[in-house]
Length: 274
Image 1 (cartoon, rainbow, N blue to C red):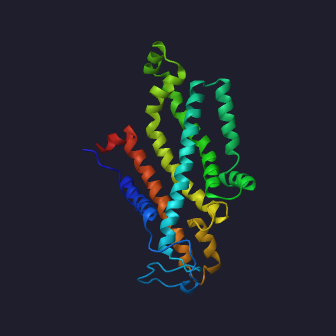
Image 2 (cartoon, helix red, strand yellow):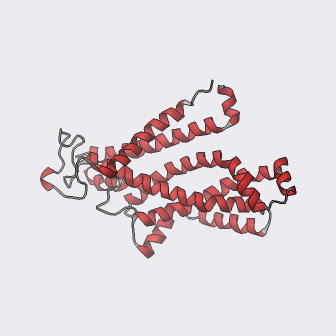
C-alpha cells in the first residue's frame, strides 16, 4: 500500500490554507482594504480587528487575505507564461538537438538568464510604469528559459528510446513525436518544476512590490506591507512580522509540496514506499 510523502501532506495543507484565504477574499473580507480610517490606526488586536490595524487604519487580516490573492495570482500567471512559452521551446530544441534551432533557443535562454527578474522588471517598468501586470511579465519572462532548459534536458534522453524510433518509422514528424510521446513522459518533472517556480514567483512578487515595482495602491501586497512597515519596525513590529510570516509560510508550503510531488511522482522513489 502506497503512503503519501509527509512533505506532500504538510505542503498541501499549508499552501491550501493560503489558497483558501485568497479564494475567500474574492467574495468576502472582514473590512474594506481600499479605505483610510485614521481614527483606527495602529490598533492592537481586538474582536473587531483580530490582528490589529496598520498606520492607515486598515484591518491587517483583510490586508493579508487580499495580499495572498495578489501574490498567488501574479506567481500563477507568471508560471503559466513560463510553461506556455518555455516548454514548446525546450521540446523544439530537443527535437532539433545540435542544429541551428537548438543553438538559437538555448543561447537566447542564456541571454535572458543574464538578467534577473528584478532587472527585467526595472526595464519594463521604466518603459510602461510599475504595475502587477508588468511584474507578471517580468517574472514570466524569467521563467521561460527555466522551463525551456528543464523540458529540453528531460526530453533529450527519450529521443533514443525504441518507441520513439518506432514512431519515426511510422512516419511521424519530430514535432508531432514531441507532442504525442515526449511531453506526456516529462509532465511529472514539469509539474514539480512548476511548483518550485511558483514559490520563487511568490518571493519575486514580494521583492518587486517591496521596491515599488509590483502591485500599486490600493491593491494590497505582502511585499509593500513590509516596505510600509519598515519605519515602524521597533514601535509596531507586528506590521512587518505578519506579512513576513505569510511570505515564509507560503514559500515553505510550496517547497514542501514540490518535494512531496517529486517523491510521489518519481517511480524510483515510489518503489521504496510500496
